[in-house]
Image (cartoon, rainbow, N blue to C red):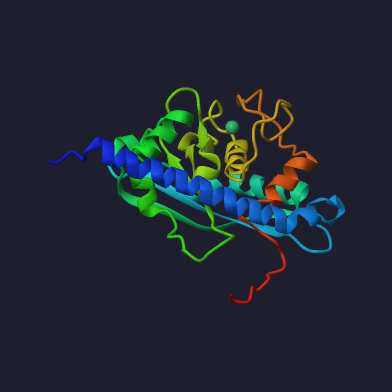
Length: 252
Ligand SMILES: [Zn+2]
């Protein structure tokens, strides 16, 4: 077996992460400028102009024996909650366009990833390549509207149950137990929407009633699903969010 040399892999990974961040920042700025006039008038959010759309895909991994970590129907509650919350408070519908199950066994490192900065490090070191193999192929010409992919993993290190790399990546991870209503201490339908919020650039919020409150402890201390107006504005100023009216740009 051959070990990949660490340094070149890290350099490629760092370049990729930096490139993705720069690309994300540029696209978010462009999307933000394009919608700034609209979000400055909150009355236009989700009213007569119709709803904006964020596309979501789900990737369910299978364990070392090839058993899927969860089933597509178990995800319905979390996806519906995300759609309800974003729709009602930001005028954005969350459209799940596909749920795929990777039937072959995933490597343990992909099933049980690390969180936050360590996940970013792993991404830079190329240890998240298993996810990226299956992520939506991105058209080099697509400017806005790339989907966000939710990768369902088995166990994230520490007490974290979901994790996003923010604008660095078009994917987030979520533990399978979040979607299992038979496991009340883990079952938490707010996490998918929370991680989508991060993927769409929302930072944490200190109000427990807010969707972006960092802690959620089911079954008693679930975080809320509230969104402030400025958070709704940020969600619209994002490359994943497609406005209701499609504009066709002339070449050149
Ligand atoms: Zn968070």
